[in-house]
Image (cartoon, rainbow, N blue to C red; front, side):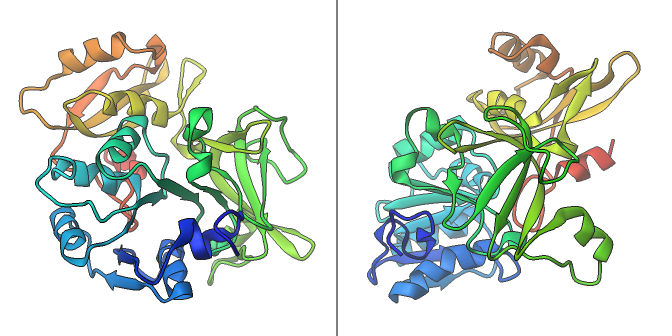
Length: 331
């Protein structure tokens, strides 16, 4: 496969034997394979790290002269909090910055382009999909309006948007938001010792299987996929649907916000209201300043957080993503 093909993960952006990757993922997640296989394919060098630590990662990039940095967006934000673009670390060896696992916010994306590498790539997938189903955006895809997308279907994969909670036949028109489902030759069809979960997330279709992602999104007229958050993360306030990702994007555009996570909490009048958890770069950043910033943004009033909680850290999943479920359980 060539790097121009949708299945070109195994030689993306022209990886050569002289390239080097720091792989911080574990073998239980498809990210390990998506990061490693292109390098195995051409005999390039992979340096495996036993744990994730931003400072250790930046120092290792310098020492190993890594040419590809492949991380989830949360990890990229942690690198910048550690001073990735401050000049303290020599990251000039990086020629390709890649990410997967979450939607990348525009502020962090711009910092990667300007401070790390202008050459970008992203993957949308999950362990259930295997290594050859999902979406991919190559460097040539990541420009203009398409920069906000997660790419187009990989080779031999199909992506469909359906009514949330529906089946494969409940497809929605182009541009309309719904649940993302994906079909392809590497999609699983069983969950180990849990047939009830398998029936919920996998839908047979001839020789292939549709995976119900639980992600909200839409396709444009060119077949590019845009994600809008998780179905179960949706906040319903006064009967209006609010996706946390958009609110988080605006919060992260504040120069003194390092991390942000948004959830819905009970409200006697509106059903739910928006609560934001914030990791601040500045000790004196307070609710009133953030509230003024959000009021002056392009967000609608109903999307604006009504509660702010400042935290030292946010709970994370095993893949390093922010765990909103854990935040909701603590309310």
